[in-house]
Image 1 (cartoon, rainbow, N blue to C red):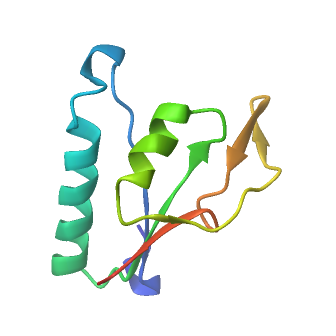
Image 2 (cartoon, rainbow, N blue to C red):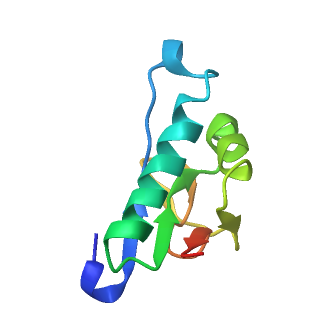
Image 3 (cartoon, helix red, strand yellow):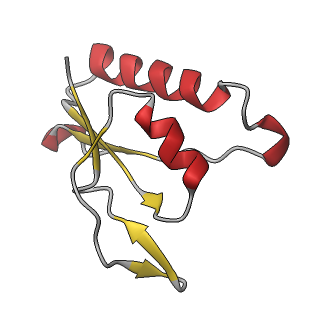
Length: 91
């Protein structure tokens, strides 16, 4: 979190048996609300694997907006870059 720069990065990982229960959605909403209300954060970024369909579907249900894909590859997996892919701005 770079509060002095007004940005934070959010990541979420759920065990397989915890997926599909809206836990991730609720966690994202709560963390974003807390950051926007109690810090100087004005923008939250997310990094997502391009092939993680569950994470992409989850982000589509949140205020995050996809801006573009990148060619970043980490450990052989194409990724969507958080700095320019999914962004939620302070309401």
